[in-house]
Image 1 (cartoon, rainbow, N blue to C red):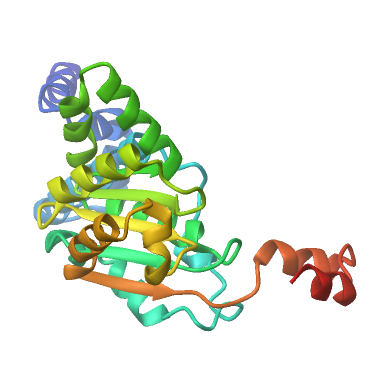
Image 2: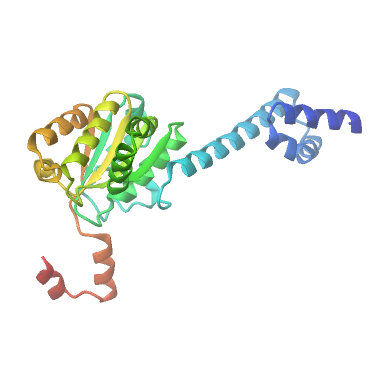
Length: 260
């Protein structure tokens, strides 16, 4: 291949934003010279490599935008240690089909049983299935809404939290809501209702949400919208962290019993 043609091909690839192929062009040409694929097979390989590179880049960008606090994968979740978790449902949720239907996911369980792990892992899976995702703790979310309201920018902030196809809210219920915060949360839930999915982790069972929101009627209205199209996971088991401490001998059985 002449230098002129080689340079022109690289320029064309750059203009078509096929940067991965432009960077690997020489290596791909050398490999083709050795293996002598058909024209169609060579073209197929080129396009497949470019698509795979774009997918990896898109996923990396989606994960960055989502603001996950840590790297957690479904493959790393110990289903044997938490047999109460419906692994079949979790793997179904990982396909992202529920997001296409604007359905919600609620994960209930005490501290330390893997709720956040599942939330992050399912959020990453959603990114990989081409859905926009935002991860936020309940306290951070409420603080942002309250600040926006005080500054006269509540509509914009509600729009911000309504835009992602999946909004992951972690640790709902660890602290009780102030009355105004509960109303702000209701506005967000109502805005996303049947339009976008929410994945919520909480240590409070449904019957305790009245105390969390400080208003039984408001809690019922929120739950009505969250549960209408939803999937629920209830984790009943021992904290991973406490289990590790017991294994290391830092906690004795007597200590554990007295702490209950």
